[in-house]
Length: 188
Image 1 (cartoon, rainbow, N blue to C red):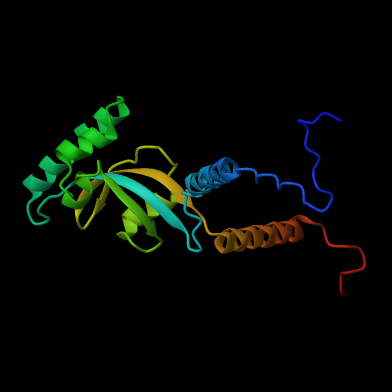
Image 2: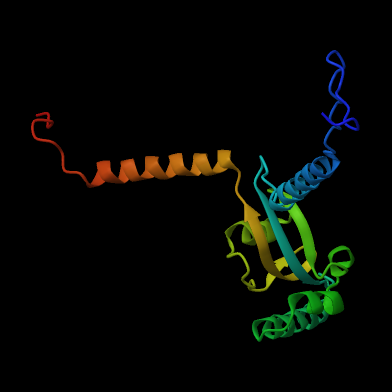
């Protein structure tokens, strides 16, 4: 044994190891959780309503119901706008510059999400039966003439289930009407 070497005393404990720095892993975990939360928020943005909802945009040209000249002028104006839409012009730009509905005009005609029964009957009918993304014919309500575009539509699960049951019941009734009577079922 060399004189410069020290021999540890038999009863002295070994020096403790320094703990590992785990902060970078903790911050990485937090970053991953934030990204996951943002992904869930982004993918869950479409409403999943318990009630059926429709999102529509429109251009309104109002007129005085007691003035046939004003009504004619309004009809010509809405007809021209509809033709321009069918030719490919932007619905939003035309709504912003020509619609008489001051509330939706600022949003390019977008009326937002609405449940059944929100709009005038004629308007409502198109919103629920019209094709999504298509431009409507000219629709007249008490507010004036409208050109409508249904932007999106969500049918509630309960309503969808109800329609399926009605459809199945109608199919069964049709089958019963079409099926010939079974032998022996005739009473004399």
